[in-house]
Length: 369
Ligand code: DAH
Image (cartoon, rainbow, N blue to C red; front, side, top):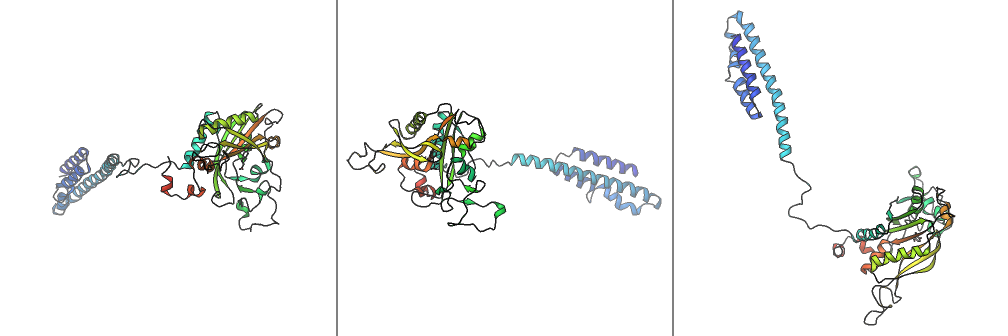
């Protein structure tokens, strides 16, 4: 009897080893441990055996059954895991495939496309692109750019100040008694110019960079939004003159507005350039201020020039604020310029209202790109 039990156990073990799927293993279980299988039947018949055999046979049959049960349970887990792996590999969904039905491809927003177009022009001229923080220290936004302590742009009515976390809960002080901004105060940068200083502190001369980014001012009407985009340019090297600035901006104007364009510089004032200029590009919409039918050009308002940006030679005082002795105004010189991305796009595409860029109206956006 005990020999038969050992034999059944060995047969069961062999069958488990042969089963290659969970379904085949289930069949093995039914055949060897099911209600009609021999081993369980043997166990059930133990009570009918002569008393001296009951102990030994019962024990052997029980052990054999437990051993087979454990073996099948272990092997089931192994086979289930393997089958899951196969299913996972076969059922894999490629979420990067286009949806069905296919959706029309999107396009770049006109401002993104314009920014990239401008970046490409300056990359072609040998400039590198840098980006910087939108939450900026007053030091970089105003002080290091040579703004007088009472410069109007510092006003809380013009500029968004950002409270430091440790000052949370304190009420902001506004009005005529508001304290003047201190260098460690934080603002949403009002222009990309603070990156002039940051770029010089991060890289020794010669330096040729353009810096695109968002800027913020407390302004809102048809030609002003509280957030807009600028591109700053900075070139610092030996003997960089206003003529280099003019040549660079002429190449830029022709690349963006057409090969026939000219540029002119008009004297202006910016705190961080000396001399400072405003730069106009010749109007691409008319001849000397007039359309073909003789009427006044609505784009340049009959002046035949379009103002596109501010620029100048970097003021020596600015180098003094750069934490790097290699920017010594006796040794280096350079030019800077700053332009509005919205303004360039509006001129180029005759867009009448700045707010159209931000309304998210597809009837407007789909006209471009
Ligand atoms: N930061 C000036 C503004 O926001 C624009 C500007 C003017 C930038 C002259 C310059 C510059 O780099 O040289 O109005």
